[in-house]
Length: 263
Length: 189
Image (cartoon, rainbow over all chains, first blue to last red; front, side):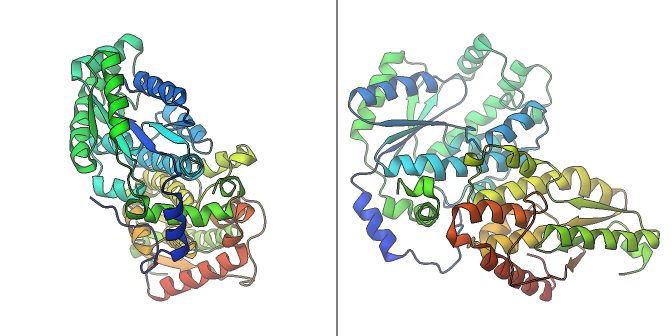
């Protein structure tokens, strides 16, 4: 499913951009996304993976959903006040993603770092769709898409996810989907919402070719599998898959000194 | 302006590039409608306070691309529709939205974003019943005044501070031209 481009129709990729991308294809870093429902073990595996990459001599940059310095305070305050409709939440998350992509993820990849995304845009897509939003509209909000090289999708049963989440803390209002389930108990709400989110992840896994990791396997088994899959992974060819997002960013990067230094 | 009974429950978009002129124009329109005994309210830009809060953040973090700014404008417009515009329309009141879709779409297009992407992004917003375009003054100048005055001022301050390709005079001139074109065609997006 390809989201419509965000660029002016008829705009052709300049030759200098294509040349630049070709030159950077070998030196650029890889983008690895860790996705999956809460309590599926993503963060544990992300930490192990980052440490392993560093031990192999790679420079690693980690980015987490909702962490853009520009948008994070807005999101946090509104989430705390339970003041967001599903559409508003979707757009603020898309703004957060865009801001991190342009200012953190792409500059890091360009400079050769391996970027690990602890939740990429797919969490937003799965949750937005689970909230009843039209997936096509949501995809357009995130357009132009930037495809990661690998997406590890952690799967666990609903019972495992719920028990892991409940054992650590009560899930927050929006993470538990209480805005759409209207259930008072966050755990009960989480269970109802997570089942919808898991269904959406299954759909996205087919569309976006996720690599499935069984989150119920022993931690070290998962880690070994992730290492192996990473070593066997083939790079997404930027010039084919990510040309629109990169062209836009390069035009922007050349203009923004902080980012331009990297580019 | 149509008769009183027709004016009720209507959404009127007031579009323009400068926040101060938009405010003046929307207030004048409101006074005119009130004098005709029309129940009227005004929905201003940044009712959600998102842009205001962004302005309070550290300067080094105040870097955003046109696309990010459009996503934030759309989020703010959703807030305005939910809390201000739709409830007032449901009560049969007239709502002046200053600005509404036209200004944002024209600004986005002047920044190089595609019409399709903008149309899809703002697909949730109902079409206004009428569009009133503010008489633009000093068309050959950029924006001036506080960034909190309006969307154009805020965005040009953010974009202009970091990027020569978003030069404010050119950006405003193109926004005005696009706004004039869309209003001439009787539509705002």
